Image (cartoon, rainbow, N blue to C red):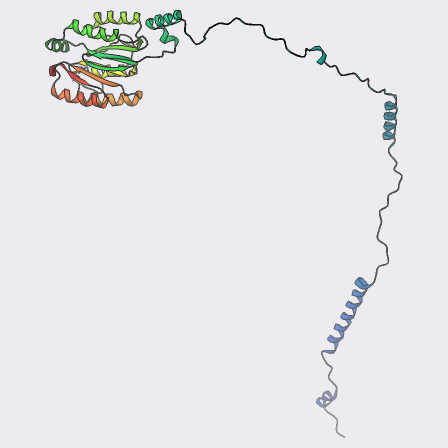
Length: 337
């Protein structure tokens, strides 16, 4: 008898499928999922929704009830206010205003000036007080000096009273008395409210006043007396500041008075003392021009500058003409007359 081998025994047993358990597990899970959906979603809920119901009777706190009761009792006990009738004043006033009384007729004109008032204004103007009362209101005047004419409200005269100038003026036929008369005539011809000033210079610089004054009667008399006493005097004084003396110092003092018209009387030969920035001796016209430009920028004014010369050298005359043309003035030399 022949026994079967192990290999034949194993081959005779049927093989189990690997997909059977997997399919069974999926079917079970699908069934459970369907049951859960049915229970959660599809099964209707028979419970009613909650309702919020309030009772019709409201019970207030005891203190609030007591307050309402007390308030009702007070209102019942209070009496109604007394009513007053409105006061009317229409009956106290008349129906129409009384007519105005008849006034006497007069030809009074409030614009017409009283002759006495006009005369007082003239007296105040001559004394220079009117200009002060009107806030130093100035008045334009015509001025003429050695044939050069101009007009302005603020007129200033700079005259060189060095010995060389007087010698050249004498040679040109202008004596000291004639010079004094010329200056005095100019001052006399100014209107009462025109401001004027006098600045003598050589190397030193002085002033009649350190400010321009009104040409009132009293000021004119003082100015003419001062001209007679100081036209050839070496005594010069001023409190106005300046650095270089001579013509540069005189121009510096003049611009501080803010003139509208400047008359300069000289021979054009200027001298100065030594300073920290300048040397002593003759003043170059280039320095004079620089000084004028600096003063114009500093004070913001450009006065008309006229120059009356006595035997001015040709080189100086050319420089003077350039300056007077730039400042709208005139140049006159006695040697050319």
